[in-house]
Structure formats: C-alpha cells, structure tokens
Image (cartoon, rainbow, N blue to C red; front, side):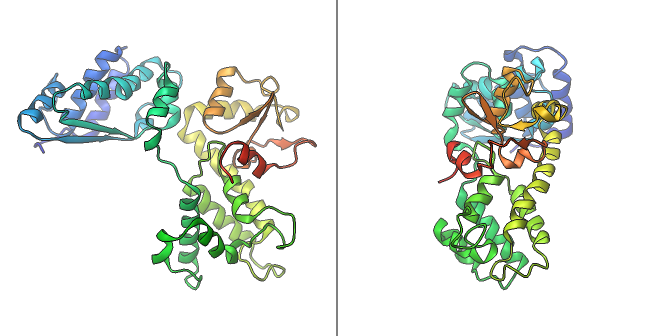
Length: 346
C-alpha cells in the first residue's frame, strides 16, 4: 500500500529496545501503533505515525488488516518479566480497543498468540477474554487429525486404499473405517477388551485441553512403523499393538525437548519436575509431593499438562513418559477415561 516499509529486523530491534524502557501500557499502545504504520511503509520511523495512519486510511476510503505473529520469539520471558507482560497486554487489549474507536474502523488487526502468553499477560478477566475469542481459536478436531493420518499413510504407501480427493468430504466414521488396515480396530484382536486403536492414539497424543500437534502425530506414525517391522503375527494391520504403545515413550521424550525450547514457563516447571526424587515422580501425585506452587500447578492445568481429581493430579501419556513419571499400583493407565474426563474423547 505504501512505499519503503521498515525492515522487519529493524522493527524487532525497536521492540526489544523498548522492553528495557519500563513503558506503561499506554506508551506501549503508541509503540505498537507506530510499528504497524512503519511495517506497512507509512511514515517510517516517525513518532505518531500509527495515529496518522488511521486518519489517512479514513480520508482515502481505504481499509487495511494487519497480521501479527511470532510474539513468542520477541517475548521469551513473558511469564515473569513485567515489561514484557505490559507490552503484550497493550497489544492484546489496548490496541484493539483503540482501533475499534476510530471512525469507520479503517484499520483492523489479527494477532496469532499462544494461550499461555495470553494467560500470563492478561491478569484481570483473562477467562473473559479467552471466552470472547474462543470461536477463533486455532484447534484441531478429531477429524482433522485423522485426515492427516490418512494423508501421511497414503503418501508413504501409494497402494493404500484411499482416494485423497474424497478425503475432505469423508465423515469421521468413514475415515476411522479407512484406517483399520493401518492400525486395526483395537489394540488387540477384534474380540479383545482392549481400547479402540483410533481413540487410544488420539487420546494418548493429546494434552488435557484436547490439543494434538501434527508433528507429534507424524512422529508417532514413523516410530510405530519402525517398531512394527518384521512382525509376523499381525497380518492384517501395518502398525502392531505393541509398537503403538511403545512409540509413545519416544514421542513423549521428543515433545518435552521441544517444549523446553519453545515455552519458557513450562521449561522451568519441567526442569523442577525432572529434579524430583524418584519417589515423588509418581502418578497420581499431589502438589506437595511435586513441590509445586499453586501458580505452577495453574500453569500446568492451563496448558493441559495435568488434570485434577480431588487432591490428585494426572498427566497424559504424551507428557508422562518424557518427564519420567511412573504409575503407582493404583494408577493403571487410564488413557481413555482421563481423556473423557477432560472432554476430548467420545
């Protein structure tokens, strides 16, 4: 729309510099508005350009939507740095509110932000804000996850009996039936009392918010396939039951490594859990046994890492193995029942 937009690296440097200035939310709002204007090439480096941009758009009868992403890279200490929290609060609350008050609303904004960042930055009415934007949350549902499984399987095995052109219109039941040759109907014979394969896999790879990451799913398929090699017992499925169960351990270890790189708040808590004595790394566990503060438990709950039953806490398999938590005698794996409790399985 405008010529000579400010380079993204320069914008990031400007934001980093302001993080050391102890700005209040109003000052951060003006900073963000200027960054938006400079980023689209309107009056680069001129203070107050953000406010002038909306007037310019209104006069020219033009509209503009700005997309902001990658906040976790710029604000890596959002969980305990007050300046970073104020910057994020201003962006998430002050900027949209100011834009909504402008005549004609010529400038809109879309912000891609992680749930944990919102909860750390917005101290008051965080739940209300989350509920307001819930319809726009980027979440996978079961069907989308299963479609990915079908797509990956077809790419790996061109002879797999599925027409990818029909995949977008298939129901969950149809997709589930299609995947029977991949992992069978159950984690055992069809007459066994074992869990249904599709339900077990989705529940085991999901957190307690019902979220499952594509990389975890693809990694699981690769590891389970490797572990199914040379099997002669299960003739009518590609992934054998033992391989499906055993793959979870390797998937969990990799996930913990990735979270420790990407999520500062969880990284600190995970480090604390990993230093616990073996006697305290048992599931279910109490907050006292895990030596966690109420705020740390809240972070785990918010991120779907644990679920609470009375005074006990449980972990999904995708976290349990990687954090090296063992099951007590009274805690037989309850993958599906805990998933149902968390509202992620039917």
